Length: 296
Image 1: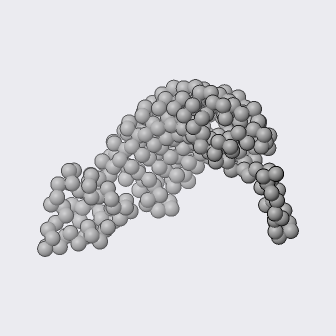
Image 2: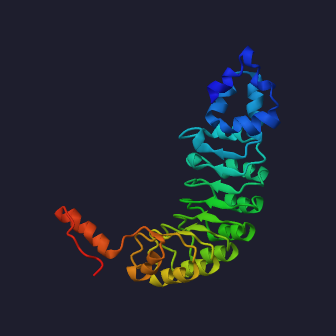
Image 3: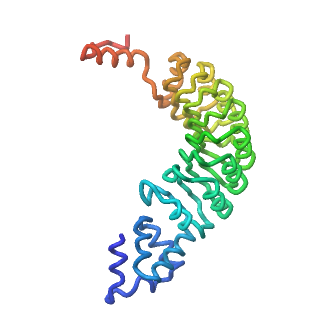
């Protein structure tokens, strides 16, 4: 794509920069070029530098992984210093250094964000989540996986102001307990996807309230939620007819007696039926699995 753009500079083809920037180049051409290549174009000339700066100011989606495995802090600040119309923001590649001071100005300027990815950004604080709540009323998807700083008060703020949420990832947010999850699902009843994985504080109360408040729920991750028991799974089966996948690996108090109802409905589960697990273990031990007629 970059080569094609450069070829447009030849005299026989005219100059790419002659095309209308805001009507043609930015919305219909540059949006299809990888961000890392666009940044390289800035070194061609001052005109290209101005064009790319205008593109960055009008960028709708920013994913730090498009630039490389790690983006320097100074480069990040420079790239987004003029952004005001972002709709999607993914910053998992900034987890090593991203702080409130870096992120809050971006949130203050961009009120149209509907998708934010902050997985592993452990140097942020509850101020970030409060700012998201106050500045992003149209938020649909939010990932806070492995963000230990998320607490019940900041989650309540999110629930109060972002009621259109459809997907929330709270994996390993270990400060959260049942009461905070219950408040979230009561306020955000449109949830379709929720992860509460790797949190030993989450129990039956949170799961049952989720089931009763979120009839549109399609995906639920309870991996490693040791306090979840069979009763919660039965309530899920009763109140969530659209459930498509459920993860309960390492939930030692959840048995096949409750999962079987979901399995019959075709819900994707991350644990095998007991007989199938036994056959796999037997095959590992003896090197083959004997033929068993499971229809008997």
